[in-house]
View 1: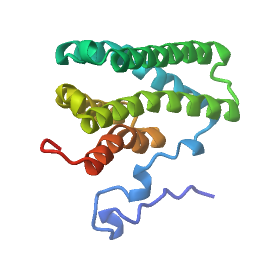
View 2: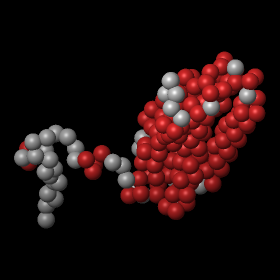
View 3: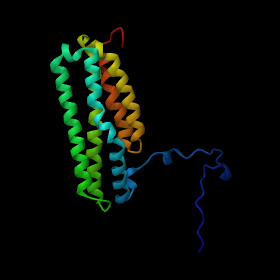
Length: 194
């Protein structure tokens, strides 16, 4: 018995008329991968985001200092600094634990739990920036930080989606977590600049 090569019905040679891949082949189904490949994808994702873990806190401190909210809204500023520091610490601890807990022979269920925990921690940073953007859009006393925080939100929504676009939850959830809260705040409290 001979192997018959798989034919693509969408190719021009088979009468499909288009060189584009079918839509379903462009979506990555991470649950269809074997556990070892899922584990490697998680390790790669943790490696890709390692540098970005520590960007959020200094960026917010710089924005707070330059916009003046560090002096005018001390509780708001230091509360968010503490939340960003705790989030960064949780990501570092999780990454170390995940690397030491298992290797490429990890079971499917354990890899799935680690992937969801990583995704949740990653989305937490985005949701925090989204909440910050909503706060500066809603309260007039925080107006001085609105433009810089909106610019950061736009940048991290794009960068986070590109860096981890192979994880479906991040590709869809990260821009939503970052951009939906400020958009809703702008809709509920329209102002001149929104």
